[in-house]
Length: 307
Image (cartoon, rainbow, N blue to C red; front, side):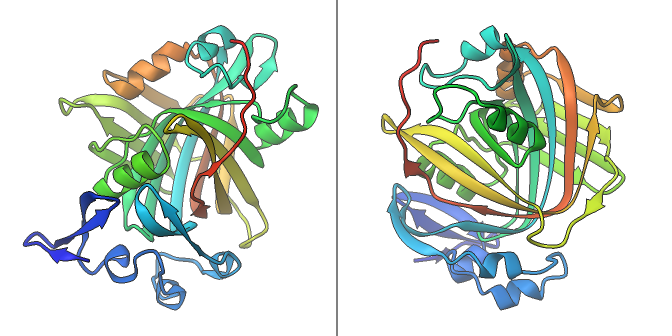
């Protein structure tokens, strides 16, 4: 049930938590069962064929009964991939997970920024500090894991921090998915020329900020390049995996980038990044146009490992 407010929002219940969403927005009108024909008329959306092939299902979750996947119809992202010592990475990983190494003692960490212009839960922005990990069910790292991970066709990750700009994204992400999410000031602007982002800390200062030239973009037909990310979280003491699928429409990469300014300020993200002791920026990936399907987490078996 929606409760109108005087600020252009309505209050909705998510598993006993009350959050405000834009009045008349996609979530207010459709509750995740969005009319794809209406979305297709939005000039910011390139098309909806990708989503027509992904039927939604109803599931019970910590945020109540919901539909999955969550559809993101117009997305832009930026990611810095950095080298870091495996010892520092292991100090931040649960014992059941192991870093994805590109050489003995050297792993991969990343800083990511996301802008979701059209989404089932309405516009919001997001940032993350994450660690590339071995697939949880693999005892040893195979060449396929290394090659596919570096190509970004399929990645497995553990996220240390994941701030967002909206209440519904925080509650769904934290309570429903088990991610370390909080709400803060978060600006992300990505176009074919320039990529800029800033995450505010609790005092309004800078936690992390990025300024860079956007890598030259290559255009892909819908469905030609679909990548996936599996993220591991612990929910009520049990391991879960969350799958997200990205339909890449326009993207580019710069290896060993020089024109990237990453400001590491004061805050939760900055502390997490510093704890990983990154040594060198390996790659800068920007997707100026894309789409995403985020599935609800499912229980998964994660074997015990020694740190």
